Image: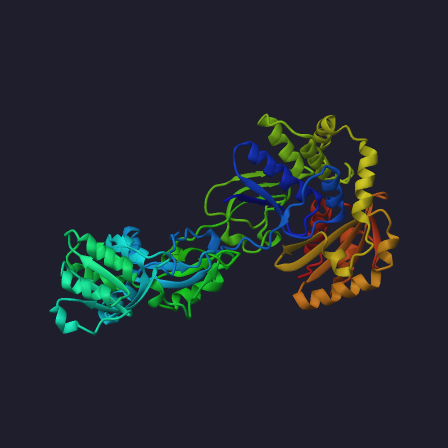
Length: 541
């Protein structure tokens, strides 16, 4: 199973690029990983991915434990025209108590258990059989003495002949299947009366004249070199498994089912095994109670975040292997020690670039372009207070590979990413939104970037109304929309909260929606610390 690498919800360019670049790095180190995203890829990231001809990562809905993560039991199925005896030997040799029955395409048709076989041996119809000549020969070691062309199906009444031949005179016919030893008088009478099948037991050679007689009357003869008692005892088990397999009320699960959704069904029912079907509804294996005791977990690596609230749904059910981040350490916890790299720099892509460098992994053009783009995006082309000399140096080094006009490229990237045309107010607000808990208050902060503030002011009333509704519905204490102007190096603030003085006090701006705060561009390094300080000073709790 591949390790999943992903950034935070509402992924930005640094998050998307770092997950792809780190996945490539891990794969070059001999591991098996795949990059994913937890939300819609934004226009800026799309521009970058298309520029460097990188496939868009798949969307990851959650990392909850699914049936596919369990070490389920794989069992070779049988067909409904196999014999009960064949099923029994198959189950015994594989030490299983339940066997699936599938059609020629692998679709589940029924289940057969050891209990079903046992009950058939006790309560079954010993005088009727429906099977095939091939089953009889394969399962009982039969030797065909004569089989008419295209003759395989056998269905009729079974008789073991130990009578004087005159006692059964006139009683045999085409519906009869006869089991007999070297009683030539019975053999001759059975052939003349054109029985459906003649089974001769024992080791004795059968005179050729009886085989010729069988050909004349088109009566199939099978010789089974076992005693008559053994053959008669086992013959009933040559029936097709379709006779006794369960076909109704089968409780089935799919590989994509979540354990939380099915465990109650398993615990409250009494079946030993439950069939699993793949996405094409074909049988793939069994699960039972024992598989739920120590379920496998999805293995994940987090980049550009380290808080559960910003990660994939069900992250507490996953096995976190590594975290690569440049944000403050949040409430993440793990059961085992992990590789946790957290640095006070401007971009996760800078950390990943340095890992390439320290491990001497060659950087192809595409990966250089992604990492360079992630750094430029997250540092606002070196204008953010989070930017460090290491970020600047990383971009210089990476551009030796890409040979871009950085000024022109950065402006094109920001222009692609800041266009708001075609987005709803919900899509605008959530394109880069993060939850925070400050002094037990539920706070949400959205940050978008723009080259033209007029695009936002046109939607101002709609955006504020959306925030007011969201705060009521989701019970937020504070919601803030920060619109960062890349050209003028500052941010406009829109908000929904009970005390509107908090925003003006925290950021030293006018007491009005859309007020501009010069040089405030970083959510991590400026907005969160300044908001936290204002909450504490105003005792806004």
